Length: 212
Ligand code: B1M
Image (cartoon, rainbow, N blue to C red; front, side, top):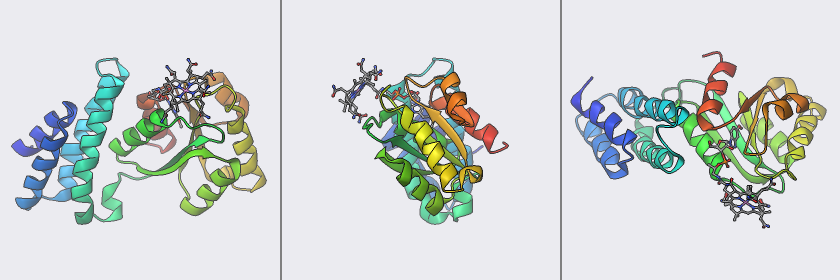
């Protein structure tokens, strides 16, 4: 691996946003292959971040900085990549359910999916069952993610699954749920395909659903 790519990995893990941006620009100036910079620099760094977060060696604020660094690098590289090259395959759409405005966890989950090379559609917060249905019709994601932080909004997850059934598109998408009050049992009860206890585990489940 080139020295610059190794530095990108190190700086991304350390959350050095400006450094990652500068090194990525230098790679482009040196006419390095943009796809190689994504795979062996940004995504390789985020793989390590995901593993460390999972075992408790990194904490949420650090993960958010690393994810921000990855985004800065991706912003520079994106114009040099085809859609197929930007992702390793798969689309993940995620939103926070109706009545719920919490978005820190949802955004972190989205960023970790991006870090795994999965295309992410952010549907936003306070998303009604119908708006989830519309998003699935429009973006045709492989996985639909729902986040809820309030016990009072958790039932919206089941309602959304029912709305997808009524729209006749439940079988076209895998469903993952998560958020502090959500449990594996609840996920099973409402007929979701997967549950993510935290962002790193959500990515692992997501990869399984994508057959990776
Ligand atoms: Co609110 N809030 N809040 N809040 N808030 C909680 C959730 C609460 C537990 C605090 C408490 O009472 N101890 C409590 C809920 C109680 C309950 O229902 N059991 C609560 C309450 C009551 C409320 C209000 C009702 C308060 C009020 O107005 N009286 C109100 C509701 C507003 C609304 O949504 N309609 C409210 C408002 C707010 C703020 C706006 C002030 C702010 C949100 C800002 C924002 O998100 N932009 C806020 C915050 C910050 C919190 C706490 C302090 C932190 C939440 C957070 O961001 N955690 C929270 C208490 C706490 O959790 N300690 C609390 C960090 C984040 C990274 O973790 O979101 O859990 P989390 O995400 C994790 C995992 O859950 C998982 O991965 C993430 C990363 O590992 N995950 C998924 C999340 N989504 C996933 C989806 C997946 C898979 C994994 O698959 C799709």
